[in-house]
Structures are given as C-alpha cells and as structure tokens.
Length: 294
Image (cartoon, rainbow, N blue to C red; front, side, top):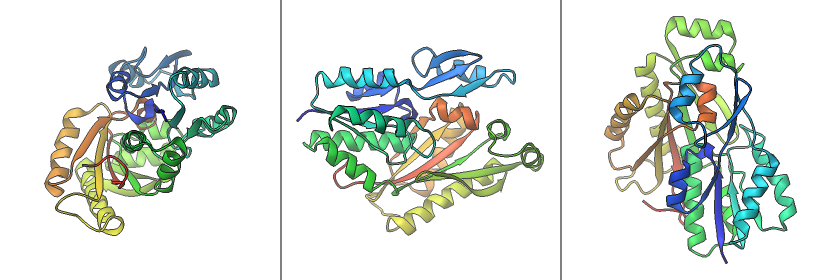
C-alpha cells in the first residue's frame, strides 16, 4: 500500500523542503492589489513583507482553486494507492471543508485530515503522518489517528503591532489605539478550531514571559509535567520577519526547558498577513506513540 502525504503552505513547509521530505505542498494564493500570488512560487517572504508594510496595499488571503487542489491529487494518485491531505485548521479557513467535499469524488483514496492544526503544529502532523505511512498504516488509519489527537496541541502568539489585527477586524480601531498607547501586547491562543485572546502584557518582554509560563502550565496540566527526557511533548516556535528576536526568545525557552527539542520556522505568509511582522509564537504538542519520535 503506497500512501502519499500532502499538505498546504500554511504548514510552513517550503517547496524545496517538501522535495527533501518526499511530500507535496499546495501553495496558498494571495491577492495583492488585484494580482494573484502563490506562496513560495512567485512570492518570497521578503517580497511579501515589503508589500504588507505598504499601508496602501490591498492584500487578501484566499482559498486554492478546486481545480488546483484536484489536479495535484490526480497527479499524485497516478503513482500512489492513497493520499492523506493535511490542510490548515477548518476553524481558520474554509479550505479544509472544501477539500472534504472534493474528496467525496475519490472513492476513499483521498483522506482529508481536519485536526485543527496550523504552522509548526501542522508540520508536526505531516511528520507523524509520514512515519505512520512508512510503518504501513493506511490513509484511513492516519486520518483517524491525527483527528483523535487534535486537542493535544496549543499555540500561543503575541504580536508586535495591532495594525494588522485592526485591519482584519479582529479588534476595533479604538481598542487597537489604546493598546498601542499603553504598549500592550496581546497573547492569543489557538486551541482546536478556536483563536481566542489568552492574556495581555505590557511590552514584548512580558508577553514572552506569559507565553513561557503558558508552556509550563500546558506541560504540567496536559502532558504529565516537565520530563527530564522530554518524552511527552514537542516544543515549537515560529516568527514573522524577526529572526534575530526569535533566536533570542528561543534561548529563553531553552533555558526554561533545556532538554526539549525545539523546532523553529517562519510563520506561513497566510498567517502573517493577519498579524503582521514582529510576531512570535510558541507551541506545545503531544508526541504520539506511533508518530515521529525525538
């Protein structure tokens, strides 16, 4: 049984990295000033942020065209018996629900995973799926396993500016202005399909402390505490166009959790579009017995 693993660029996996892993990544589209771009195809990270920081730019994320999704699936299924597709969380986009509808025409050969992941946690789902496929698990098993563990992951994010949350309608102009005036950095949480406010902090330094404390709380309440062998959870980090600050933050996390392996990647552009440059994120995700191991 040959099972292919497919995801989208919301996972943070680049096209070149996808080739190294032996998987396929569907690039997510953007409309910028009326022109369509595709992440990591005709739009680099640097080009995107240059456009994003232009206050006159009209930038929108959009869903992949049905024809693009199914054309990729059809091509992959020429050489594989089954396909597991791991898109971004259905709570953050309608692309997952659409993919579930498209899959109905494939007589079970395409299994769409709706496990509420994005960014580093979505990437980990891809690695888990790859390990299960290598171990001979079929697409139905992989889908079920990833979905039954969808609540075993948390993401905490803080933003450097309220501008993009205001533009996207997630905060009112008055609330954004008040927060900027007081130097308040919101800490947001993605758990399951929900993106909610988690805490408020004065300044980025305190926001980072809040996120580290949230990691510790997560490990203690959900994963049996901090383990010397780091065998219970993956710690992930992500950032938007601020690598130097992200590296400094990583050192703080490593000092708190010295034995835990930490993966760090830039956030996908479709996420960055809504939170802007300068954001930082940390994640905590269960290590699955039948998934990738430390």
